[in-house]
Structures are given as C-alpha cells and as structure tokens.
Length: 145
Image (cartoon, rainbow, N blue to C red; front, side, top):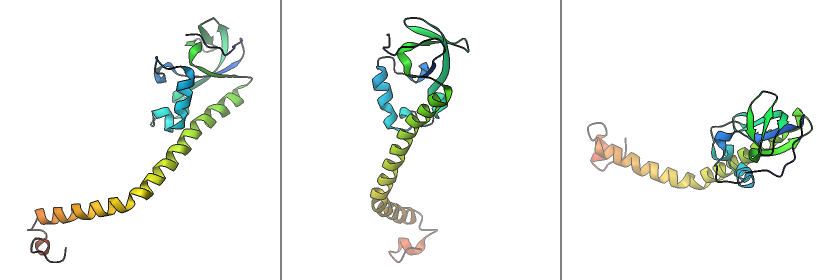
C-alpha cells in the first residue's frame, strides 16, 4: 500500500480521508470518482472528503501532519508547495463532479418532463376515481374537478 508520490517534510499534502476510501481501490480509481458529485458521496462537501495538511514526519507507508494525525500515503492525491494551491486543487476536483452531476440531472429532468407530466395526470385520474365523494364528476366519467 505504498504510493509513488514523493512527500517531504513541510510539503502540503492533499489526500482522501480514510473513511471515504474503498480499501480495495487504488488512488487512481478513487480520484476518477470525482466525475460524480462528492465522489459518489453526494452529501459530502470537499473538506469532508479530503484533507489539506503540511507533512511533518514521513515514513514509507504513512506520514504525520503537523496536526499530529497519522495518515496513509496511499490515500494521497497530490503534494503541493503551499496551502493555497492545495485548497485550490481540492476545490477544482470537487467542482468537476458537482458540475457534471448538475448537467446530467438537468438533462434527465428535461428528457423526463413529458413522461412525468403524463404519469402525474394518470395518477391524478386514479386518485379522483378512488375518492368519488370528493370528486363526484370524475366518478361519473364527467370532466375532472
């Protein structure tokens, strides 16, 4: 579970929080999940999915941030020279999936609008027929109330 990304003490590290990694996946597979909102965790904002921390102690499989927390190197997405560029990359990666998911959802809504209108009208007829005491004209076959 080692990562080929070189980390040195003082580097700013962008990585996935362990709880958002599928342990059988590679980092490449995990990063490709940015194609969807929140990498498939649609409720999760970028700061919940990823961390940005300067590295303090670096070992072959893990590193410790200046916050004292030990993290796996295999969950590292990128190493950057400063906090601003690490945060910008995190926002950019997260935005890619947000934008793609929004476009997909908008197109799906557009394509499904006629079907939704038709099915809602059918459901309304059934509701009115099931409640003749509230909609007497619908039960008699007359115009819907």
